[in-house]
Length: 491
Ligand code: ADP
Image (cartoon, rainbow, N blue to C red; front, side, top):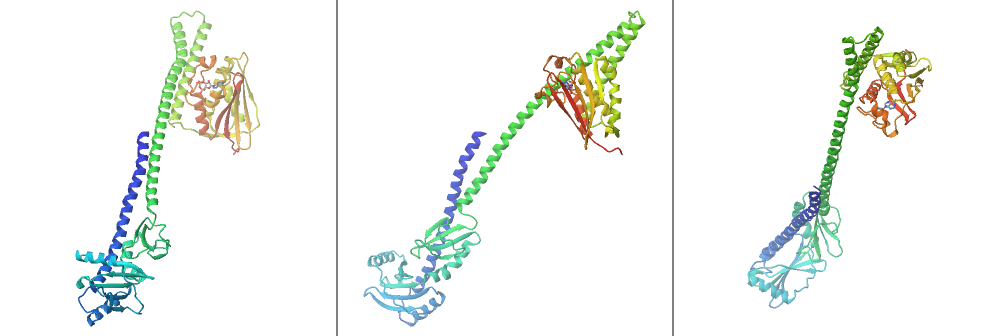
């Protein structure tokens, strides 16, 4: 792919060159056609003057009147006899002036040579501010010289301009300017001279002047480089997309692998957690069935264990069911206005038997009165229960302590569950609320049974309550989990 992109980039500049070449060839041929047109005009003049009539006769006079009337650019026409090098007749369009220019002999010889080859050529030479066109009429066998004095401005405006305007249309600017001084004689657009034009050509019948052409909107280079730039951006975009796509695939594959690992760990954790109570229940039930237990006290003790272990099993199954219900958004919350100040001691009391069986000293600190929140009672029990359960599970201190307290601020109410357990290192703290996440470092964390669902369940429930859960913890010293609820007024 990289190779392909590099290759594409290098061919782009070649393409740009080629497009530019094609464009400028086209522009050059437009300029050529304008010159060609000017030649047609001049040839029409020469043909209309090429007659075997008396240069001073009436016929010629009528012909001249006609020609002058149609062509303002023509200022004078002079006929001369080449043999004696003498003027035969001169005609003026409006005012008379002196025409005293004679072409160089080699030039005349050349024209005669052309004429012998049956080709009539019209030559041009500068004449003061005007042009002097001259040719040898065919009908006089090259013995006569015909000179035409032409006004360049009028020639362009009258004879060439309609055709140039037509060619320029809405697409091009065409300019005629002095090739040295760059003084503009004619333009179809704004007076920007030749410098801006994309192609230029000398004017055949206007010595010292050039024709220039450019696109109205942009120059060729701009057009071609804009195209190339657009192509460059597109290629870069494609390249970027490919790279992003690759990164995306890698991230997804890694996520999938991680998820597969987590799921298989979850299955083994849950099986492990379920196996212990199941083994105890089946062992005690079997002993009782075989009537091996002699005293009633022992019997009651065994039954009590079966009862407790099945309650534990129910707890595990409920947690998994709860989790899957929450995950599929199947859970229905029944929000009531609850005063945590009153509710919390009640919830904690439900866990007292558990806590004291695990030799955990639990303190529920009375906070400020009236900490009203909107909460679902069962979910409240689940979140607090999960935190208390973890506080019991993740502690190896000889004196295990749990403190539960309520903090009330203007807009929020917090329940804090603080333990003096093993704590959680900073690098794990941000992940403990992810589903299936378990800390496996340290002996106890590794041994303790669990599924990695508890804190994720707490997080989801708190979200549904418009609140959050967070943790502050120090490895080896203990953890404080905080449940943050939006505070409500009493009524
Ligand atoms: P588990 O079923 O593993 O207890 P949880 O989602 O409840 O799953 O907890 C995720 C992980 O966070 C646990 O595996 C444990 O390592 C860590 N943890 C949770 N609560 C505590 C706590 N009070 N003290 C230390 N570690 C804790």
